[in-house]
View 1: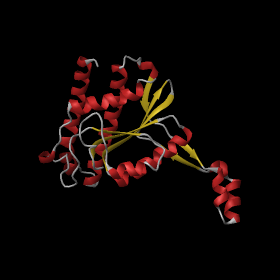
View 2: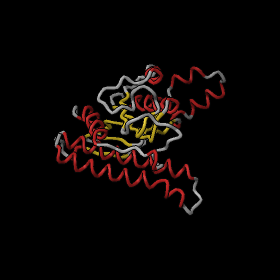
View 3: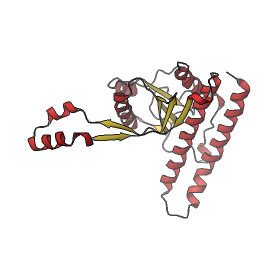
View 4: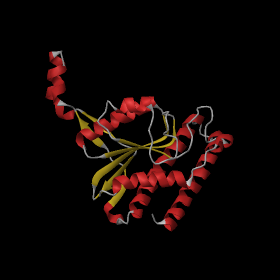
Length: 237
C-alpha cells in the first residue's frame, strides 16, 4: 500500500467525518425549515457513508495501481422483471390473464446506494448505512438477492459506520466470525455479502455518536481495513 497517499487521503476522510458528525446535532437543532430532528440526523449520516464509500473505492483502486479511466463510481437503477413462472401460482383467472396481457410492464426498480463499474460493467453494489441491525439486514439481503438475478457475478458490500448485528462485526480486524443471527439470515440467500464496519464498538441506541459525549473516532485502522476489503474484490479486474 502506498503509505504516503493513504495517509493523505485518509486524513481527508477523517477530517470530513469529524466535521460532519460533530456538527450534525447542532445543525439539526438550528434548522429553521421545520424538518424533523431525527430526519436531519439520519440524512446527514447517510450521505456521509455514501461519500466515504465512493472515496474508499477510488483509494483501493489507485492503491492497486489501476488506471482511473477504467473505474466509475455512481448510481444506477436496475429493472427487476417479473418472473413468468409466477403466473402459474395465480388462482384467479381474470387476474392471471390481465397480468399476462400486460406482463412487459411489470417490473421493480432497484437502486443501490453506490454502484462500482469497471470498464462500464457493474462490478460492486454497495449498501451504505449509519448502522445495521438484523431487521434491516433482511431487507439488504432481499435487495441484493434481487439484483443478482440479472447480475449474478456482482459483488455485494454493506458499508456501515457502526454495527448492531451482534457478534464481532464491530471489531476492527481482518477476519470476523460474525453473529449467529446474521449468519442464519445469510444462509437463506444466495448472496456472498461483504460486511465492512468503520467504527469500533457495538452501536448503542442510547449513545448516538453525533452527541459529543458518545462520539466515536474514525481511525486509520478502520479505513485501512475497509480499503483492503475493497481491494480484495477489485484486484480481480
